[in-house]
Length: 106
Image (cartoon, rainbow, N blue to C red; front, side):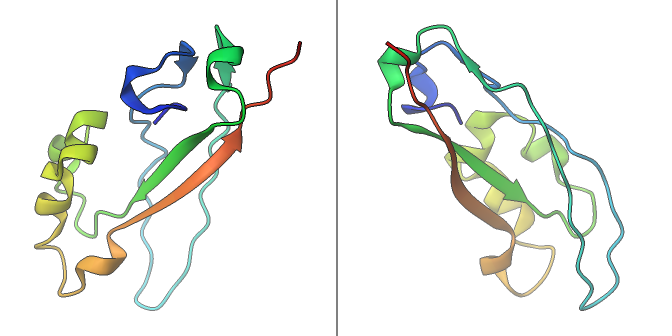
């Protein structure tokens, strides 16, 4: 999600859902995925000191992408609802982190 949310006053991109890939992780295993989008804002002064919000989604059975394909679905709860039947622990389906912070140059 761009700085300042879906209204996107800075004209920032990326602005939406990016599929990083599908991986198979064994039980109790770990995996690290990397994405390197080109972060940019047409009007960085409008979002100075704000940050993008990154949300990582784990779909245990690779069957819920249709419910998690848009930013609106992710933010509205439709994605969480679809993921809820994948396992008994709803707390580990998504992670939210603020990154990176905008610094407008004068």
